[in-house]
Image (cartoon, rainbow, N blue to C red):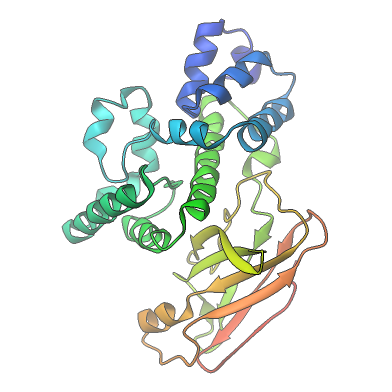
Length: 288
């Protein structure tokens, strides 16, 4: 369906379609109130502005209830029938998971829900079950404030992907990379640093707070650390790399179990923070 076709739908059809993209009633009502959309940019901006500037915790929690738990594909056939095709594809990485991984994922999901009061939300597209397991285990260490910040960003990533599935959207900002990116290169092995957990943090009242968390892909990168169109205010930030786990995975004996790179942004443009890594040293620079 094109945006032009979508603009011809009646009010009920529009609300149903938008609810399948994001289950927060306030977000749906706002988008419906500015319908029809003048352009793709109008739709994109209104979706982002409402989510980040008008919605609050209760709206985020409401949206989370419209997702099945990661790995709970049976519930797609019942409670989440309206979005089962999308959610099933988003969680396709579960289909090849071992029984042990599924059991660990189920336990981590339970631990997460008991700690935070809502299910684990992650943009699962392109992620394996093992990667999602590591993410939920890492995010269990966050405070409730940190985790809500991450979960609402993951929800917005899902919303953007579903809007793209609903409509034929072509403008590049729908696929824009994160404002903050990195590339890890293992100079000892001469290849990208795959499978490294990276946390993006900001400094608030002399304390580091987690903003986003991801795992490097086969090219040593994380393209979606921040959602499309979301930029950070100029300030003091840190990229924290869990290098000890990486060394163990690659059979290396590393001297640095963790690496933290602090940097300062001056505007809302793109910042690339690469890491050149070997077991006994590392270096960084501002990339492009």
